[in-house]
Image (cartoon, rainbow, N blue to C red):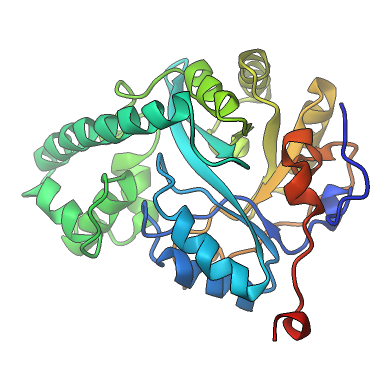
Length: 309
């Protein structure tokens, strides 16, 4: 696996403090505007970040404008929804050149798929008691004109007092295999990987430990992802079990994957915050920022406060 030399970032994943390659803003289902998210990242000591809103890059320009005067390094990105063997799988695209080529058309298709999917989710949730589900979910966007996601419906369920919190909303109604888990509108895993590669980006399998798979099935997913052209996997996503993380590191090492780190931050006040991750184990897995396509980003040095004055 080729690596870039003399990167400004560490060559070891375990030393990747201040790096967060998976976060969301109001361009999708996050609570903070892109500029506000960048400000919070700066406050928390994140120096290198990727904005990875669901199926869009709409917030990237604002985030980049906010990051530059703060001396931060921002990598454009997106998190694409896909399906694999009946499971909703997310793929982060790290896009040093932004969205282009097949990915541009893919993002348009994803927006349409989200709209169609929202209507199906709304119909299903109305059957369990959430009246005017689509309108209630739209109210959760804070006026943002964007496709709806499952978190919007989760917030609507909480507001309607049908569930006590968002976690319960997913556990009962919106998680994998539940009434609000609609996968039929998403493209296959291999297709979204092709979009990312066509845009000159790196395809990263998002939070592989959250899909509730056995080790064997996770291995099959990793194999298929690799065959499709996926080159990296999130070794740590927010907080996760240390033993499972070490085992995942072995699976990635066996297949020659790069490793990525991301909080999957959506909103302040919860357990997850920008740059907040479980301990990263010592491993031979090479950091994704060492990937040749991310060489310029990996070599970019953040400007210190004294240098930016």
